[in-house]
Structures are given as structure tokens and as C-alpha cells.
Image 1: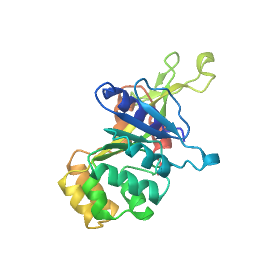
Image 2: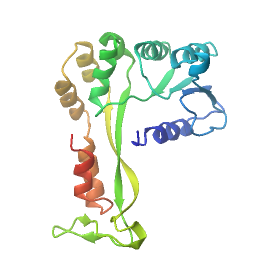
Image 3: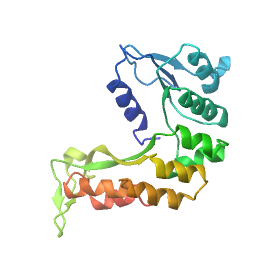
Amino acid sequence: TGSGKTTTLYAALSRLDAGRSNIMTVEDPIEYELPGVGQTQVNAKIELTFAKALRAILRQDPDVIMIGEIRDFETAQIAIQASLTGHLVLATLHTNDSVSAVTRLTDMGVEPFLLSSSLLGVLAQRLVRKLCPVCAGRADNGEGAPVGCDACGQTGYQGRTGIFELLVADDAVQSLIHSRAPESQIFTAAERGGLRSMREDGERLVRAGISSRAELLRVTRD
């Protein structure tokens, strides 16, 4: 959905040694070919769902499993069980921020005690437009501001980059997930552990003149 999450997933997989680890993916569709990685594409025509494909690759004893998207309880349940049995599982979900991924999974039917035992962390991300390097100006407060030129089609922006929010499931966060605590409490505990919101992370891009405050507020308005 244009957040860059697939690119981040592939980047994470590329940092792992496919020569030493058995890495397998289930995707819809396969967007990039990864050397040394076993990639499976779901196929509705032959009823090869995420869940069925996951069950099949688990029989091949993978070390790392990447799931293109967790869309239903069955897929979530298999992913959780795979994590609990020693597999590193990377997956994506559609949520507004890192903490709401916890709510999304429990709303699907995942038991909080299983989620708290298996979750390592959640990385939420969105893309912001970068100021055009040819025409970028400065606002009165010194921050970068869009101007517009032929190079950027008069938009003032050219290219995109990510803003991120990393929730680490430390002991405090795991305990709150286990006890079905509200998102606000989990977020506060995660902040104590070092979490910065996507808007806070985006401030570094504004200060560096890479993006504008208006663009940051547009992308993080919710």
C-alpha cells in the first residue's frame, strides 16, 4: 500500500546469510527474486493460501520464514506457532502504528499470552516525499520548504524516504500484552524502552532539510 514495507522486509532478509540459514517466504506476489531463498507465491486458483503454503514450508524445517502479509487468524496462528518453535518469523500487517499491530492480531483471535511469548518487535513505517535537491528552499524558521521547478514537475518534491517507529517487545511490553492492556499503556511502556513515534522520527528529516514539516504532518496526521 505504498508504505515501503515489502522493501524493508527484503532488506532484512538480505542481511541474513542465506548460505547458512534456510530462508523461505510466502508472498502474494513475489516482487523480487532473492538468491538462495526459497520463495513461494500464493495461488487462489489452486487454493494455495498463505496458511497452506506456510504449513508446507514448515515441513522443510526453515530457520527463517517471511510472510508477505498476515490476513487472517489461520495465518496468524501458524506464524505464532512457528515463532514459538524456534523459527524467526518476519511478516507484515496493515495498521496505523506499531502498537495497533498488537490489537490487530488479538482482534484476529490470537491469544494475548501466545502473542506476548512470541513477539520480538514491531516496525511501523510510512514514506514521506523528499524535497527536490534542485529547488529546495528554506522557511523563515530555517526548515526546508518546497519551491517547485522543472526538475520536480513544480511539486517541490523528488523521491521518497521512510520514517519509522520501532516497538521492542521487552519484558514490560510483553507483560502488558499478556494482560490485555490498552494500546496507550503499551505505547507508554514502549516509549520508556526507547520507542520514538513516526512523527518524532520524521523530525530528523525536517531538521536535516530532507523533507518539509508540511509533508511530515500530512503523512502522520492520524
